[in-house]
Length: 184
Image 1 (cartoon, rainbow, N blue to C red):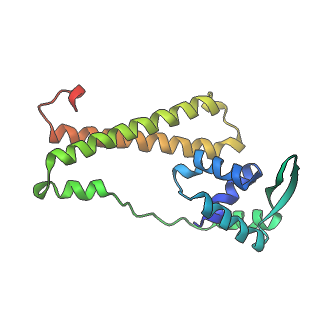
Image 2 (tube, rainbow, N blue to C red):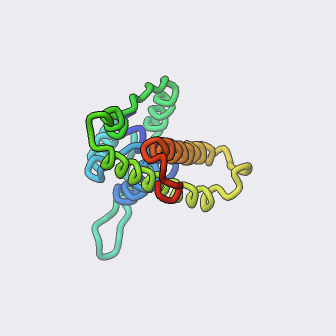
Image 3 (cartoon, rainbow, N blue to C red):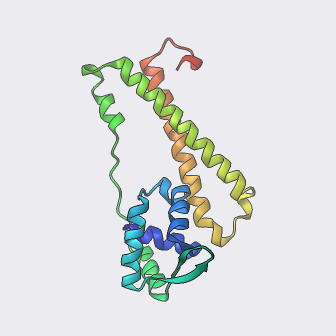
């Protein structure tokens, strides 16, 4: 997948200026596909040149005109073609996993602290996802066809964070077996 496809998805959901797109990207797609604001603006330019998006210029009082990007028919065709191609299996990369393999050679206390920090990060991200689920999909059984993709991605994030917490708990249980749950 290229960043272009992530941007096409976001713009297909709702047209946006580059600034609004970057902010929206940070709050949604950015949780699983990272891109800087600079990258987004650069790619928007390439997508405009390719004819996948077109800017609607919106006049603003006291400020420069704003470009609101809209997906074109060619952009929708590209998005449809891209979704028809098989996804590649992304390799898992984990510095923590390598550190765990280094347990016999490293600093177990530091690795344990690292796992605790990782667990806290998973808890924070899970809380964010659960709050998003409650706000945007309060009745999962009533999710519409247009909402289904976003809901499924959010569910994947929730499950991934829950799995991350469970893995950290298992690691801590093995590294600090004498501690009670509150001390892990």
